[in-house]
Amino acid sequence: MSEKEERILGQLKQLFAEQTGNNNLQVTEDTALLSDLGMNSLELVQLVCVIEDTFDVEIPDREIRHFKTVGNVVRWIDSHTSDEN
Image (cartoon, rainbow, N blue to C red; front, side):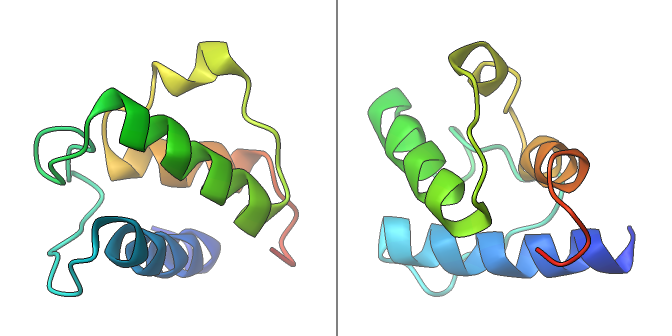
């Protein structure tokens, strides 16, 4: 995992903790968004909105269905942001 991806993962861990209200989440690249984090589809959409605001990106609806794991989200953000984000 690149340094940028590590930073993104750290930011996502914080967002997940805030979104779920659970600061003790064990989040890795392989963590499944729905089953491991206990999120439902509405919470995933809300999370995407927060991610868009945090990383200053716009995630097309067709991309959201590909977000199965935290790693999927990290790689998408990495490929759609500059190194300063």
